[in-house]
Amino acid sequence: MNIQSHIDALINKHGKLDKEIQRIETRAFVSETHLHEMKKKKLKVKEEIERVKSQQKTSMS
Figure (cartoon, rainbow, N blue to C red):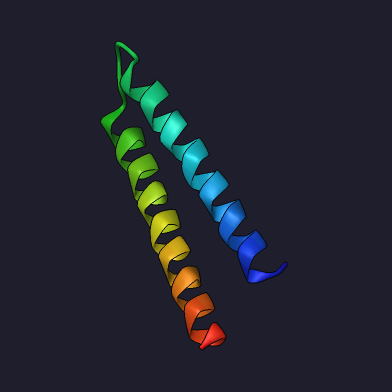
């Protein structure tokens, strides 16, 4: 998998997590623990996207 494909896959995963979080937040009974875990996963994916993008820029220099 090349770097751009990896970034695209991470962006897709980030979007899916965002939709899942929005779905969870609209429920009448929200598991705060589950919601917190989903938000942590989303943040980790975003951090991974930024890390890979940074590596991509460095390798292109």
